Image 1 (cartoon, rainbow, N blue to C red):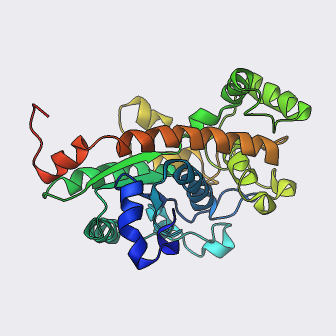
Image 2 (image 1 turned 120 degrees about the vertical axis):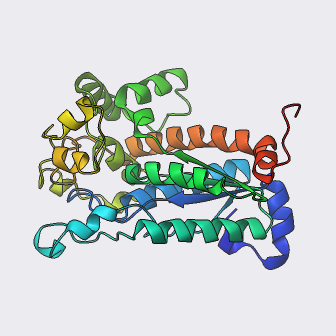
Length: 296
C-alpha cells in the first residue's frame, strides 16, 4: 500500500493490515557512470520496496529521491564542467533532523514499526547511527534499517536461484544464461554503476539505461585508498581515492531487461522475508517504549 494513495479514513485498517509497519525507501541523487541516471539508487530502491510491500501489505512512505547521504557533493567545484552534475548533498545535521521529525510524524499517525531501506551504500553508516540515536529517547515506535544488497545479485547467485526455481526465473533467456555464466567466471566486480546496478535499472526502468555509454568512463578501481583499510582506518575519502570517477565496475555488456527482472525478483524476495519478520514481532516496539522485560 502506498501512503499517498490512501484516504484519511483508510489509515486505521491499513496500519492493522500492515502489521504496524511503514517502510521508507532511502536512496540519493548522484552520478552513476554515464550509462545510468543520477536517480539510480532511489529508483531501484523504491521499485523493490513497493514490490515487497505488495506481498506483505506494508505501507510505503513516498520516496524523497534527494534524501540521502551524498555529503561529498560539496567538495565539487563547477560539477557541470567535470562530469559530476546532478548530485544533491544535504548536511548531516539537516539529514538527522529530517529523519527524526519524519519518523515522529509517521509514529504519530499510528505506525509502530518503521523500516528504512537503503539502496545507496553511502547511507548505511548514517542510517545505522540514526537508528541508535532514536534510542536516546523513549518512543512509541521502533526504527530499523536494512539495505538492498548487491552481493545477493552476483551472477553466480542468480544462476543458483534459477537452477533451484526454473519456473520462477523463466524470464531468463538462453543468451542471458550465457552472459551470466561469463560474468560468474570473471566476477561481477565493482559496486557502483556496475553490472548489478545496471541490472536493477534494466529490471525497473529499462528505458533509462544507455548501453552506448557503457565505456564512456573508466570504472576500474585504483586501489589508492586501500592502505587506509589495511591499516584498520576508514576515512571518508578512501572510496573516492579508489574510484576517482565515482564509478566502480566493468562495462556491463550483456546485461538485459530480463536479467534485470531476475535481480529485482531476488532483491524483492529477500526484502519480503525481512519485512515479514518485523511484522510478526512486537518485542522491538516494547523495547522502544521501555516496556520490555527479560521475561517477554
